[in-house]
Length: 267
Image (cartoon, rainbow, N blue to C red; front, side, top):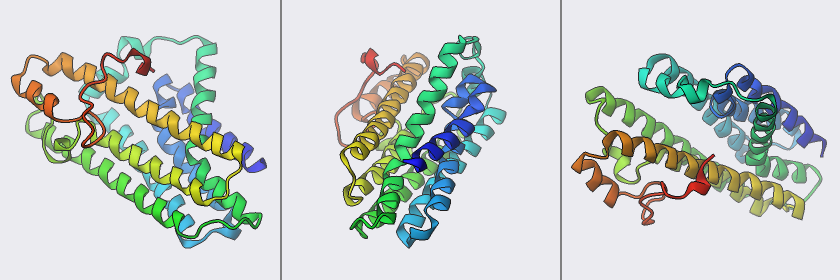
């Protein structure tokens, strides 16, 4: 149990970047927070690290650093993103209670997301008969997600250089309209399946499930916000209308083409 408190303390410290600017709780505080948690797990459980569990930590670290640096770079270079980041709603001062609540919620969520790997290592350290196969599967799936997310960001950047006023429907954007969010879902699905070979207790399953379902909700919520912005920007474009009618918003081959009306996804 002590290791969870240490992970929470690290998560609170790094996600605390949000005290500088509120949105950092969800952006660079998230990315660098995951990286910090990956390093912390590797250090805490260094005596029981194996090649696949080390890979899990490495992939998490790479994911977090890539995301954090990407967001920092986009903040500096993209005028459009600055309008979103520093718009009136985002820049509006939040009540202290709200800031503290969001900070704690984010820190807990990030620990929940990485918890399957932590539980696997902790249970292995106590001699539990954990699976040697599932960490390999989880690491492979997480790596696939990082690649997908990275490719999606790169393809969007390249497309916007050609025509910054047009929506992106090339490359992986032919598969789903939010392939970067899909990549993140793949990443955390890879982490979650480790639980199935970690000899988890009931409370460990609950923590891991809350973390996984929490990030799934966040990704669908993000897809909804993006859909609303894109509908406002491109809604009158016949090509855009044709694109959104045939391309799922987040899950490939699953005919969910819109989540805009689902206000329960507002976060």
